[in-house]
Amino acid sequence: MYLGDMGADVIKVENPRAMDATRVMFKKTNGAPSLFLMLNRNKKAITLNLKKEKSREILFKLLEDADILLEGFRPDGLSKMGLGYEDLKERFPRLIYCGIYGYGTEGKYRDFAGHDVNYLSLSGVLSQTGKTPQIPGYQLADIGGGTMTALASILAALYAREKTGKGQKIAISMMDSSLPFLSLYGGIFAATGKNPEGGNELLSGKLPNYNVYRTREGRWIALGALEDMFFKTFLRQSGLEKHLEEFPTEEKNFSKWKEILTDYFASKTFEDLNFLFENEDSCLTPVKTMEEVCKDPDLRERGMILDKKHPEYGDYFQFGAPFPFSETPITYRLDPPNHGEHNVSIYQSLGYTLEEIETMKKEKVI
Image (cartoon, rainbow, N blue to C red; front, side, top):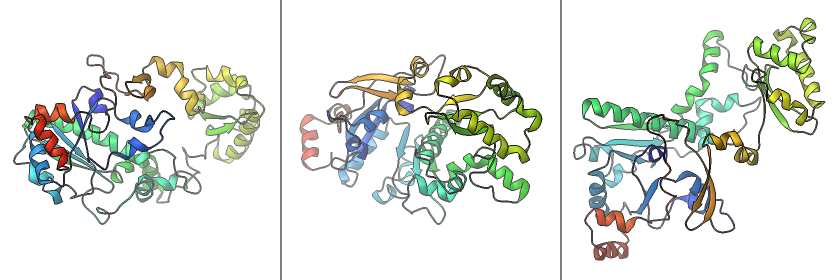
């Protein structure tokens, strides 16, 4: 989707009968597939049964003008159909072939099934999410490790092709791509030889000045005043600076400071803390709900919450693309497509007649 936002002509290829699962997940009362609408703007959609021999001819025609092929099968999934990178590279030497896999194409786990929680557990990330491992609740490995790593790799491969004229294969491992999230803890382990303690390290709950607290009415707030200058600003603004003389910010006093801060925030309502939320050096922020995020005027002004209207489903919203280019701005051109919506136009552009397209449909090729 992000490549489409950047101007690429993206064609989503789905099986004629086994459509993208997000098309049937989290539907609104009017039938709108909300998750699919969130993830599939700026794409055209065709159906193609890759197990049919005729599909090879069609895919090859598509690849004649394609820069990138992105797939998410298991390793060798397309190779078993004669459509892997080794099958394509001589015919399409400029093609950038990117596969996003759970565990990459090498090693003992290459053919294992898995999901986000598995990639996070094997990469060690899950060991640092709490005193007992806590499932993050969002797709850290899938998006942070898979999507964004693939995006960066594809853009780098496009640049390399400008220099060499050659395409290449990119094999993304969501497990491998999760390791950079542990850079801080890798440094701790390298320095001490001790396993970092989940839920009790610098960024996971050990520090009183980098933690979450509850207000009087039970709302959560986040304090991220890591540096002394910011913590002192927060203490000064909140009237807690007097405690510094008795309890310097040393590790032996962390428990006492947590008690002080817990009591302070428990005595304040969310509204009471608004002056601190508005102080640019206090590093105190509200933990917003999804509803609050979607209504946030700052996010809306900066184009990160988009109100859209689909021709079939009506009003819906999307998250914007976080790439603020000054000269080639992001554009939102196409609504998320229906299943096979562009079959006729795209297959006609490849030279197939309406009669041939209808025949391919009857033969379950498309």
